[in-house]
Image (cartoon, rainbow, N blue to C red; front, side, top):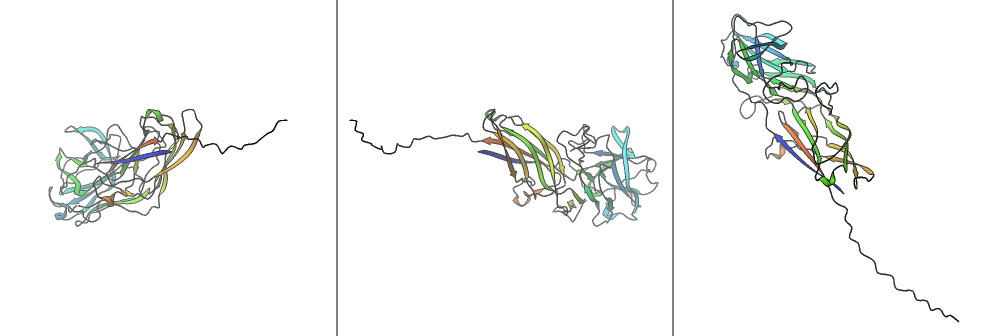
Length: 358
């Protein structure tokens, strides 16, 4: 009889941030932003590692003008007024002070002659949202992305694949900007808003190679369209806690649908980006199993309950996929050898027939 062993590992948050409430001013130049967090080896689709933002990407920006001088805490700013509302910034193709610069596209935006600015934004600009807004309430500002819907998944890869449309939703909040301006270029640090899942499959020993063939892998009941708030109340450190709604009933995501014989080498179904949520469904694995290499196969179905959490011992969180966490599930197929212990029943008592030959 087959056995499956499953192990889940959680990787810590991928992008650090600072918590300075600051404003910026420059009275003679185009507004330029220098973002952090993305990898230059990816473009629009897929999860982003490292801290470099792709030149191919664009993002959306909100900005609020204040009469207060640069360096004023947002909670203390005076005479606030909208300045930029959900506008697009793209890579300018130039560097300032060694930094790649993003600015208004298709038209530039310019710094005000007086006062200073606060910024917030989200990426990518092409994210599928019903609406985007920013509440500049000085007691609790927050970004709202209503009805964000994640794109389709395909295991065959990200690059140039029209069937893979998952984006790594990022944001930066007025509470989470950096604290310096170089040559009029404002640095901003994006934070991850989603959860990232990877699944690795293999068999336990060489003797089991090609006895199991993965046919279909489905992630069941995953919420795929929700609303995101960058801050919803305050956490234990006094700063806003990002939060997702939980209204979507969920749908099944087919992660793999072909035929992959398992060996001791990992077979990966990776780069699954999902909205953080309670884990309501299971991972359904449909596979064929053989008794030996050239034997006929039978189809089997296994439903695995996944765990999430934040990497701590807090069991209450293990039923959730948490924002900004990378989960890696290593699934190993093992098998019990068929062993028989033979014995022989004793003969029934002899039946004696007396035959007389005359």
